[in-house]
Length: 78
Image 1: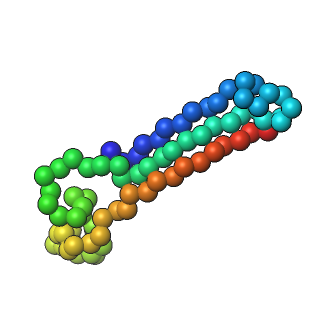
Image 2: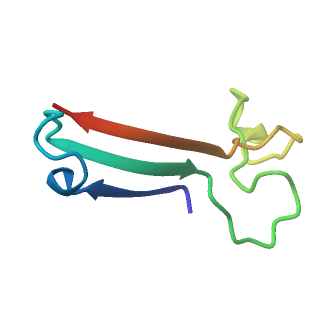
């Protein structure tokens, strides 16, 4: 699974009322490179294609895998 995002839009009328002037309030969390299901024993089954020669394509040279990233945020609309 490469990307996963979950979020919730909060009903602004119930929480903030009309005195704040907020029309939209959303909280969310997102992550990339969530997990990979494979029997591959190296660092990353998506082998880098950094070489210009075709004979080196698909060769794992111990390159670091793509990082897992987490993002949390709040979106406010006025």
